[in-house]
Image (cartoon, rainbow, N blue to C red; front, side, top):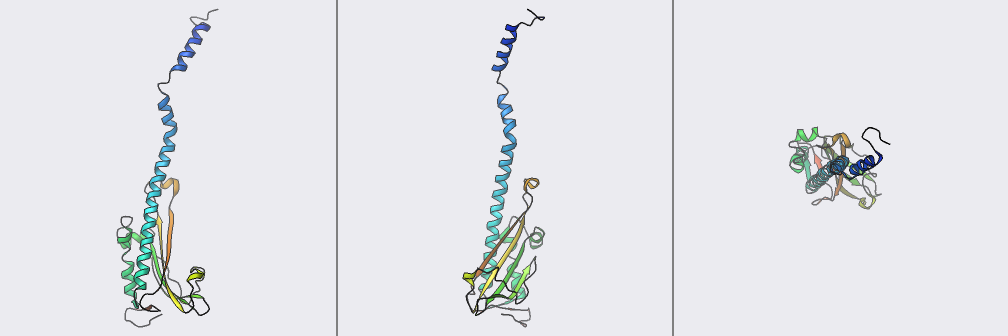
Length: 203
C-alpha cells in the first residue's frame, strides 16, 4: 500500500541511510565536551597562579622574619624598610607598596617572649596593611608548644594576601592566602624595638 511516493521499503532504507551519516558527530561531541575543557583550563591556570603567589608569600614571610631576627635592635623605620621589600618579593602580582596593599597584602612582625612557665606573650609588634598585636597579649594559640622554650624569645613573621584570579573570577572568587613563620634571634637573646629616636625601647 502506497502513501504518495512513500513505501515501507523506501522508509526503511531512508532510516538506514540516515543512521550511517556521521559527518557531524565529531562537531557534536566537541560541542558537548568544550565546556568541560574550558573549565579544566581555567582551573589549571588559576591553580598555577595561586601556587606561584603562595610561594612568593612564603618567601616574603621568610625574608621579613629573618631580617628582623638578625638584628640586636630595630627602629620603627627599620621595620618599615623591611616591609618595603614586599613589591620585589611579590612581583609581578603587585608592583609597589600602594599597589600591594590595594591587593590585600598585609605583613606583621612580632617579638614573642616565652616566660619561665612557657607562656608566649607579645613583647612588641609592628604591622603594615593590618593591625599589630597589643603588648603582653597571650599568643599561645599562635606559637606551637614545641617552640615555647622557657626564658627565650622568638620572632614571628606573618603575611596575608588576597589572590584574585585574572581568569575565572566568576567561578571561584577571591582566595585568602596567609603564611606564618618563626625565627630565633641570631645575635642576641632578645631583639629590641625602639622608636626612631632610639628611645622607648621594648624587648
